[in-house]
Amino acid sequence: MDFVVEVYTAPIATDNDTERFPVKKKMSNRYMTIFIICVLFAYFVGGCAVPIKPPVTSEPELVKITSANYPEFIDDMVYDVLEHGILQSISYLNNVPVTTEFRFEKDVFDTAHMIRSLEYFLNFIKIKPSRKELNKFIRSNYLVYKSVGSENPGQVLFTGYYEPFLEGSLEKSAEYRFPIYARPNDLMTINLSLFSQRFNGETIVARYDNQAVVPYYERKNIEYEGILEGKADHIAWLKDQVDLFFLQIQGSGKIFLDNGNIINVHYHTSNGRPYRSIGKLLIDKEKIPHSEMSMQKIRSYLRDHPEEVEDVLNYNPSYVFFKIEEDGPLGCLNVKLAPGRSIALDRHIFPPSGLAYIETQKPVVDGAGEIHEWIDFSRFVLNHDTGGAIRGPGRADLFWGNGIYAEIAAGHMQHPGKLYFLILQPDVL
Image (tube, rainbow, N blue to C red; front, top):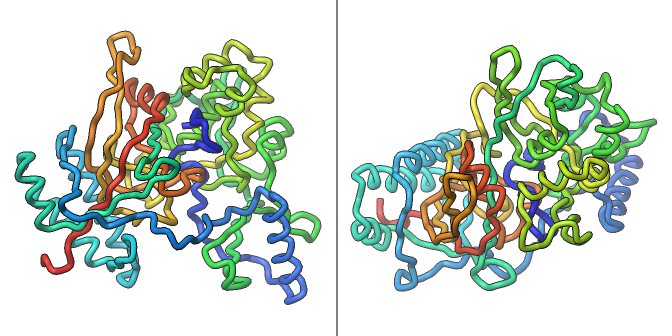
């Protein structure tokens, strides 16, 4: 969620930049060179349209641990949703090249081994094992890797996200005034690796203007200057601008239309601008104390200070465009997220679809919707998602699902914890 005090934090599926599209316009070698120089210049002077991978370091982000240092594996949920999450991971793996490499520290496993690892674990949990049986099974059959964390060695900062339910309309009116935009027809996602191998895996989001490639419009251009009229379809209209902002932060949601229908909207792409946390802004300006920061507190502040809404929201130049899906919510792997079992991590570091285990805290909520206390919990999760600001081995975002509890947990969660990954030992099968 946006409230985290680090330079982040958007959750999950927001600002994924998952597309890898080729450049649609041919360029001469001269213009290609100029273009690449401009891209590099924009990056080194702080250009915001160039998402660059974290720098490669010699330090591993995952470290293999000995069985003597394995945590005691305790799962606080029923296994049904875990089974669903594992099947979603297998579905993803069945659609990736068999030569794909999945890295766990220095160890590399192929697609087939990833599938075997998940299927072996799935077949075991179907018998509903006891805690003792579960730990014996893992120690005998699985390698375990621990995230090195960030500032505090081994510690990972956990935040949360959820699927919001919002009221909307297919028609603009005095009540429904704020549009959910589809991808604009002038937005380009440019694969820089087509120009040079030095930019392997790097993309920019841009538009073509007067024979030049330039960064795409910022939030203020889109929301307050009507710059997208005639360039992007309106998927639906919402009542509240702040609801739209947080829908973009969550990355997906269900819109209950005034005609009785329901549509699932899901992240399609972004304008390529960097995410800037309005929660951090409000803390820095001493509008909300750090100790009280949450999504709910931000909403309350903006509701009480409508004259500040424009400036606060525009502090975050990032803007998300949506598409309609038959089902949802979907993560960046294009599989359905499993409530409480899907997690968003840095896609450049951790193996996608991999089986993970987390230890952190969750809220206990009373009948009035107030958090009574935070308690320790642990469970198995699947790496199904990412986020534009989920960067490094010390960040994780847990998908809580939908409903009142999910909104409360996602809105307030910013707790340290531990993250492990499990993979079947190569000689087991």
